[in-house]
Image (cartoon, rainbow, N blue to C red; front, side, top):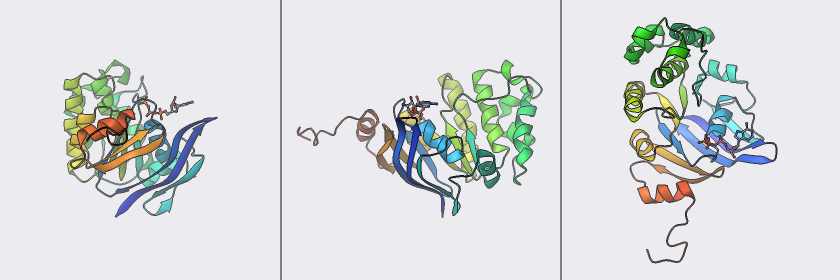
Length: 242
Ligand code: ATP
């Protein structure tokens, strides 16, 4: 079943067109990775799906409902949750308070403070500490936990690896694997190509706001992905021997 349908989406910042005619679907239970170089439009696209950026044109349909004009908080109530780039926690609130803030929407489901702490055990001992005192990896776990507290049907993750040591990224993805194995539907932005291809079932590559490559992660040739990522033309397009 199609959970998310993005059709011909255009997003602009004044004269700058950040997303150009992007269309794709995400089925329930799918893990889709959005990849692309800096400035390709990945964050803008996620924000347009979550309601943080009003598109110039195009349509976002969630579970059969046109949500293009719905404000972000009403999309959260429908089951769309975004883990934003840079985490955006409330620095003076404790870990538990940061989590509880997101539960205000009151969608029913399995996620509560205890379930989040069980999923991210590194937060257990940090429960009553202000978010600002946490390490980057711990803060990222709180940001993901906060999104889960709204009991989303679609989880949007924007560069959870950003600024974290590889070993911490591994720990965060290990916890995420538990969330994913329970059938979550996820669209994630990931700069690390190897990780994106490993985690996702399908990969969508953006270049200068356009989809330039889309396919099953397992069947995509890595060189082709790298070429699309950097906007390199294929050998045949350059007239060189294959
Ligand atoms: P990154 O990996 O660096 O986060 P991205 O693929 O997520 O890049 P976006 O952040 O969506 O790309 O940016 C797409 C384009 O829109 C870029 O040219 C960027 O400079 C521009 N842009 C993003 N946010 C704004 C803004 N608030 N005002 C003006 N231009 C913006």
